[in-house]
View 1 (tube, rainbow, N blue to C red):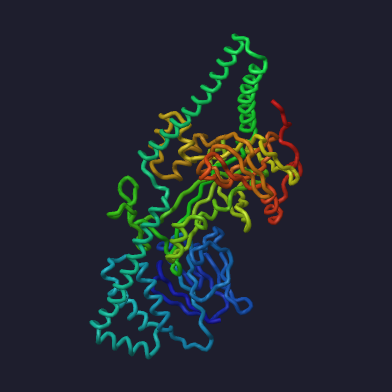
View 2: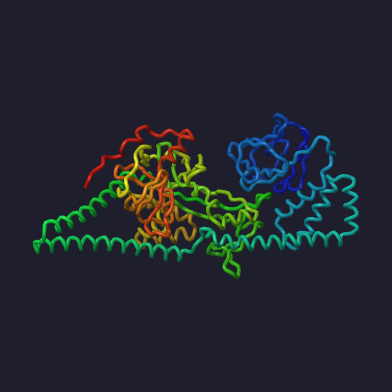
Length: 557
């Protein structure tokens, strides 16, 4: 089979190699048909990949043993190659364009491919933008001389005799492309600003932590005030020798407060180790080229440069840091192997967020670059692999990269067990995520963490985990409504509660927190566990048969 490889970056940049064979080895070794310079391309392995023809179709296989082969920006172990596919050998390694040549085609390189490859090489070569036409002309002439047909070489010779016209025409094209790219960059800057790309100043995080600290203090004060009021009322009733009915009513209120607190404490003590803080991050790639959307640069404090409207300056060129939109939520363990249940929108954030959808419409593709979970008591995060998502409900199944020893799996309520309206429940999750975690710390501790992490959400999560300060918050409430697929419950929650478990008095998960009803304060919607069971069965993941047993005996207090 006839194939062609055009080197866009790396030590062999600008070279086009033609092959008429059924096997091509790629690496830095002497036996490789495509041999890179190991000094200039350190990401390439001795035998990095192999292209083979099977059933008249070209296949590429990763031979690096490092999962370091990328096809069109996505890691792949084995894939069928299509004409125009972009191959990359190692993260940040050399880029090569694959082309399949029809058997009846001439030995020369088609004019269309020459132009496309030259443009791809130029945009990936660092240079002042105003010199792009000259770089493109030089590359075109060199490629035509080496790989072009006789007609193309004659045309090139004519072009050399009329350089002014050619440069002018190319300048117009490049200028128009520049205007289009500038417009796209301005639009993406506005969208990135709306997406809140996870970067915030240390001062802003400190202010939000202090607000959360004050809110928690106020909640504790209100609870203590309620208990004190009821206790004082009880003493007053007893002193005044009021009716037994009035005194019993106050006793019931006090017992209800104490019972609810003990209920939540028991749930937290037994199951908090299995409820993790899920952190993700995604960016955008330009369709066709696979170039990531980047910041144009960062200031000395690590904040992106801004335009006059306060939007971050972004580009698809240069070497600035790729944009990562960070987010966080909750997830919980359902077996000792590391199977995690959470919400589907926590692994496909761009499907549910309007600015992200607009970025996709503008010609960019989302790519998940970070997905991990932190369990209470652990000092290191677990990387997550997506096993599957439900197409009909907001549920996803993930798997940790290693067994989470020391974390207690939670048990799903049996299919035939439905909570009753009015029944108490406890939601374990991370409402407010970092605001809540930092607000529960003493100010000197939170200040130390902020000084260490700055405004980087990934570093902030690592700093909290190293100090073993990641733990969920328990919010109590009652079942307000029930349907075949969902459960509405009354409990305080906020951003970050999504994906957390809702447990009954028996310690069984009766729902997965899905969303808050914003127009009705304090009400939340959870997804019944039968939908999670259906997805687990579809993925052939069998839970412990004892999962249908009660986690601990029901007690009536």
